[in-house]
Every structure is written in C-alpha cells, then in structure tokens.
Length: 180
Ligand SMILES: [Zn+2]
Image (cartoon, rainbow, N blue to C red; front, side, top):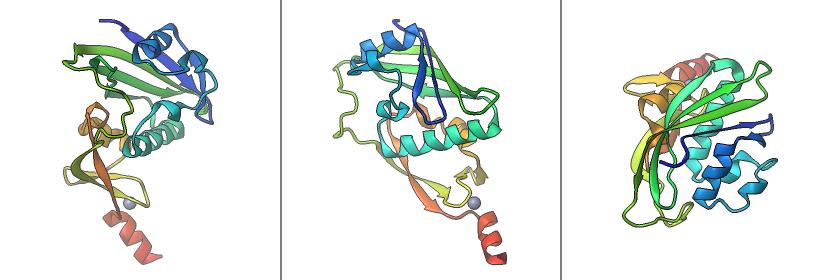
C-alpha cells in the first residue's frame, strides 16, 4: 500500500484550489506530468474519457445544486497498480467549492505496466446506458434515477470501461413536452 488517502478541492470554475500531501504523492506515483504545479489547473486535465467526463460533470452539478454528499466506489489505477478507492464528494455551504476525499480500499500490482490515458485503450464496455437528454437522468433497472444513484448502483466509476451514454428521453419529460 502506498497512498492511503488524498483530498483536493475545486473552485466554481473546476480549478484545483487545494491539494493535500496525499494528492502530490499520488500524482508522483502515477507520473502525472506537472502535477507539482497542479494548483490552478483544471480538474478535467486529470480526467480521461468522454463518458467519464460527462458523468463526473453531471455529478458535480448535482452536488453543487444541493444533492448533498455523495460517496462512491472509484477506480483509480496507476501505471503499475490497480486501485479501488472510496470517493467522497461534498460541496461547501456556498455550493461553489467542492471537496473530494478518497480512501484507498484495495491495491494490486499489475502483471504488466500500463500507460495511463492511453488513447488505444478501449473506454467503452459495449453496453449502452440510456440517459434522458432533458433531465439528465439515467435508466437503471427500469427506473429513471439521478446520476449519483446511477453511479452508485452501477458502480460506474469503478469500472475499467464505461457504457456508452445513449441519449433519449424519459417518459416524464416526454409527457411534459407533449403537454407544452
Ligand atoms: Zn427526462
């Protein structure tokens, strides 16, 4: 085990404004270039994959809008290890600053080192996740649920690959549009 916990915070423009010791050690282990100059950088510089970015952006919006604190299983691999983490995401009272804190639950060495952010690594798992383009909810087990619930139920951020988001419309929005 290496880094056990790390935390960081972003401002209302998703810029990193607070990084703890764990973040720097974690970044060094993962070989994130220029992470020592991480302050002020966009959170999205450290996120790879279109679906992951979409889901994380939605999740952040929900947390900022007062959905409360979200705790999710999160996969955060390094070049030489696979890592299972537990991530807590919470907004401060103003809703502008969002704090992320992660705890390592499990770490295993890889047989072969794998480059991070390798564009040749497939990022979708061949599945489709229906999403309503109007209310940004997701169809999970027959029910339309908010992103934090979908992410928890499907353990989306724990996966090696993501389902493809399949944009459509939920029955509720469909009815509202027809009534309008
Ligand atoms: Zn909808």
